[in-house]
Image (cartoon, rainbow, N blue to C red; front, side, top):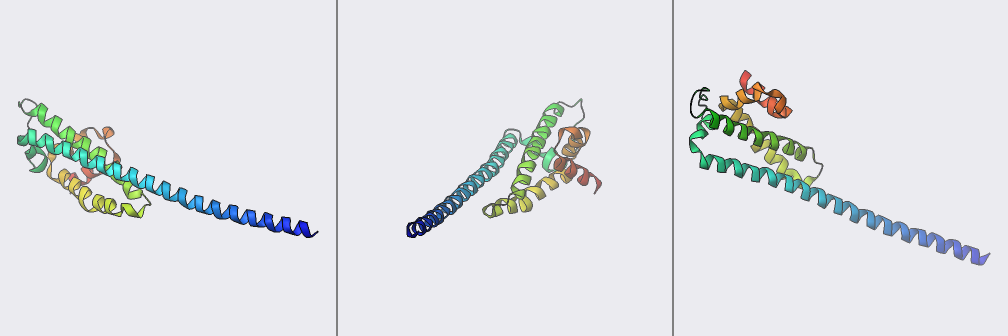
Length: 165
């Protein structure tokens, strides 16, 4: 009987030690998952920034077309020699916006506190910038509203809201 008590105590001790190790492993796994998610979010945010650099490069190569995006210049008609390039540059800008918004939405929905800067950047910088582009650029509004099925819901919403007010 005495050995039975010793065995029971040792069993309880082994279970307690096992539960302690399990708790430690669970915390380490959670930290690893959090770090992985943080790295994924950082990578996604970085990809938006890199895509923006590509857009900037486009305007360095074709500065005359900035006016259709940033200055509110009415796009040329179909017969004009700048028409095709103007449409291509507008479409490229919309591709960037349409790529960036879902990434920024995913960052915004992220539960990780370390991504707070990315969330604030999205809400305080990128979104207002995109909204202003739609207000300023008739080209972006026309391209988006003439092909609504091609664009992310937030992109389309920005185009619609900017044309009504």
